[in-house]
Image 1 (cartoon, rainbow, N blue to C red):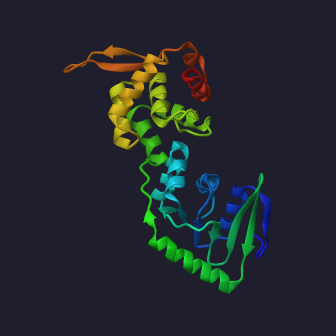
Image 2 (image 1 turned 30 degrees about the vertical axis):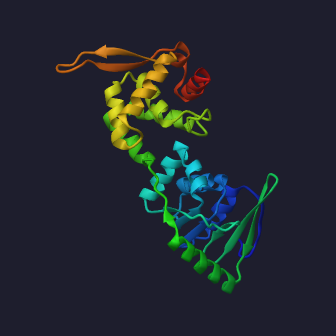
Image 3 (image 1 turned 135 degrees about the vertical axis):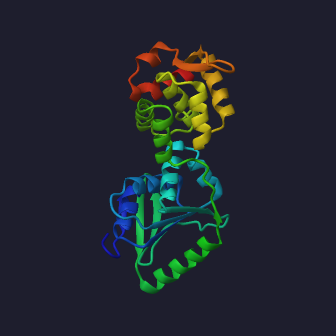
Length: 274
């Protein structure tokens, strides 16, 4: 980014990348929009170079809303796990959306469909802003992200269910823009159960994995399985075991789902659920 140059008519992701490319030690992201939070996680996840320490300060409600999307939240959890990202909340965030480093302050301004980054580089002003927002950051509350890191989810799924299930899980997530489960994308429990059914895994195994890795409780997996079964998406068959009640093997119960390529599975399932 040219020092002092405004970044006009850009995508938010481009502006974030330009600031990160300047290799600051620390980047404060103050009161970002929902789109900016998603873009920050995406840019940081895909970034090849060394990331600065990313410190994001937002209102709790807007951060919670964005992190309801498993795709965004699990990638954010990865960044937190790596020590690259910290999330904090405050009820008194400034009205402007700002990117603040020790060398530049960029105000993100949206006008209709256009986004601009208005840049200030005056040394005294930037120094005061960096100190002031660092103080606000220090006084803010830590945001507790309950979603597990996507790396851990993938690795444990491959180990505890099967490498094929991990590949299918990756392909389904890659085909989706969002994973919320509110009609705008399937949720992570539904995705896990569909992948398990495609691979004919046991309900016990997938729900135990899901609870252990931190996706959801066994009870949530059981409730979601019942809903998918009632709607004809998945079925079960009993598998006898040496001691105790038989286990249930999951299977896809719908021809459209059985015939779908893995990257179409989410779209087909979503059309059947609505």
